[in-house]
Image (cartoon, rainbow, N blue to C red; front, side, top):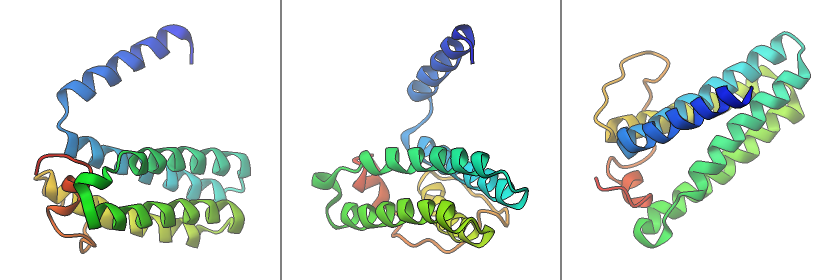
Length: 151
C-alpha cells in the first residue's frame, strides 16, 4: 500500500470511528475477523500456507484488539467471561496454524458467529442470514457493560 492509499485509509478509519456507533463498530470487527478466518479456510483448501498464516494473524489482531478494550471495572463478571472467551478464541486461532485443517476454521467461525449475533442484537441489528443466525452465548445487555458502552 503506497503512502497516499495509507493516508486515505487512515482518514476513512478516523471518520468511521467518529460516526459509527460503538456497538456497530464491534459488529464490524467481528465481521472482519470472520472474513479473515474464511480467508484462512480457503488458503488451507488451496494449500497456501503463507496466506493462511497471514489471515490468521489478521484475525488474531482483531480479537486481541477486542480483548484489550474490556473494562473490568465497569464490566464485572461479564468482562471476566469475555476475557476467558477472547483468550480461548486466540488459542483456537493459533490452532488453525498448528492443525492446518478446515475444521479448526469452522470451529472458530462458529464461535465468532455466536458472539457476533449477540453484539448485533445489542446494536439493534436484525440479521437473519444463515451465516450469522445462532443462539447468543451472552445476556443481551452484558457485552456493552463489559466494554463500558452505554446500553
